[in-house]
Length: 173
Image 1 (cartoon, rainbow, N blue to C red):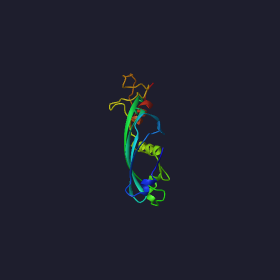
Image 2: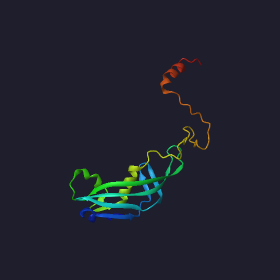
Image 3: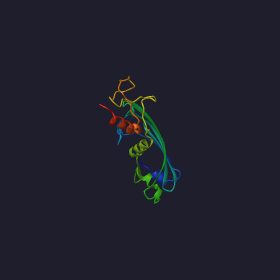
Image 4: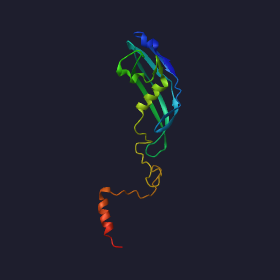
């Protein structure tokens, strides 16, 4: 959805508050697709802070259907976003404002692209079903949180591989 910011960008001291329904139903990244299972309207406050500049403040809470990074079970991930960004009008010539224009189409803010960028910036580095998640067995792939599979998971020290080769070469059959 596009929100017109021409009044805010051109009127000194102008403040506009609004709520926008998010049309985004899932987040698609290189990591996969994460459906949004619950959302609330995005709250925006647009404030003129100078000639051709506006501050965008607000927030939203979203819940995504994700998977645990260790055991791959489904996990609901709640993401509470609060943002405070500055955007400029298309006539502004300052070079440092290039990042602020990526969600702007002329004098209009693309709220979907803006919120998607905020989600990507605030996405958790690691998603776990619980802090003490044991993950999956590297041999058979069973979820170790559900029980022990009995597989031999001993990994020899790679620094000792040369000594092992010496013993194997001198072994009598």
